[in-house]
Length: 512
Image 1 (cartoon, rainbow, N blue to C red):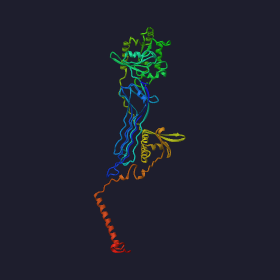
Image 2 (image 1 turned 120 degrees about the vertical axis):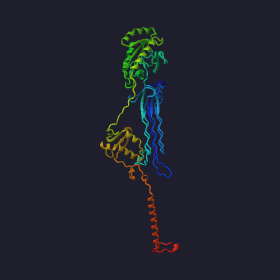
Image 3 (image 1 turned 135 degrees about the vertical axis):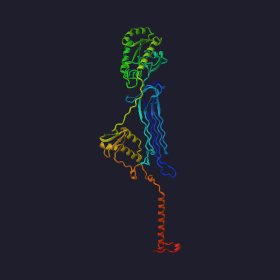
């Protein structure tokens, strides 16, 4: 069962925003008191954050699918929906985030560094927020946006000052166990080390970290053996230590040829030159050669034989024994000097620059492109605003569709369609090709609300806000009394003329 994972593919999705609410305030003696629908809550985002207590990506190897909480929908009486909680994923320091094409998105180094990989969707507006002087009674609300989905590759590049590289069974694990408190697995067969091991070394006042990288073989830069799996862990190291086996039993190997092979593999490995601390090629970094296993008589003789040739190449050579600890103290102090020198030469960390990208004068925020599919032309509309508005529209509500048409017209989409040659009845697609809203374009969209005698979203019953004055009331009362007096006089005249009589009082009625 895996216990160390340094590369995973993470499938993340932000939470969806809650829908807005379409509601009318209800109160005794106040019919049609106005819209009071609340807005939906925003969806939570998926965030990567560096945690010093995390050292592996194992958790995401077992559970690669992560989804943030969604926002709740709005309610009446101006009650807003609650926002979805962000999902924070802890990753080790040194995690490089890439997209599926291999492009570096971010390099997370240092405790607390974070990156939002899947933003949550915006909540929809309720009809209270959509109301205005011209739209006093909206009968619709906006839908919440779905959260964004992202598939990212997480690669862990170990942060260490010194990297131990060499053939399998060269004694790297024994060496790191001898100079630090690390306790890696040690055995007498190749590829004993299957994961990088880290150890902290104290040399005088200098403290630095050493990484034991699993054994490299010819073709490691092309993926043979464990090459590409662990060559990434030497990218951040300031000093490279070549551990050469002076007591190997293989007849076709010797320290000089081993060094040449490993140097060729390091030169062939490009790595990610765009991330922090990887601007210097591996072959140009300080190197130290360690001739290991001199506790074996044959190993000491071979080390003394090849040492002059190695020193002629301009590198420092140390004869050591991880078993007897011979030569280890001098090695640790020299490595400490190299690390101090590299730290002083490193540029001071700079505060992140604030990059301003002003919008171009002629940038309308959308594009309209004429395309063809199956021999039929169509017009594709792309842009953040049009696509967001389409996602937030409830197409089962005619008033909401009309509101969308008004927004697109105000933005200038209809005008742009005219300019590129669109005519009534042409097919228009808003959004990406795999998830577009398709409709036959009509320059003037009528949903029926225009026939109400006012702008879309208005209610004429709410327009009359006048109150009668005392003089108006007196005049209306006088007019009613005069109308009653005239009606009584007319009835009396008809009665005297014998048009009708009361049978119980006057006997049978007589016709004139």
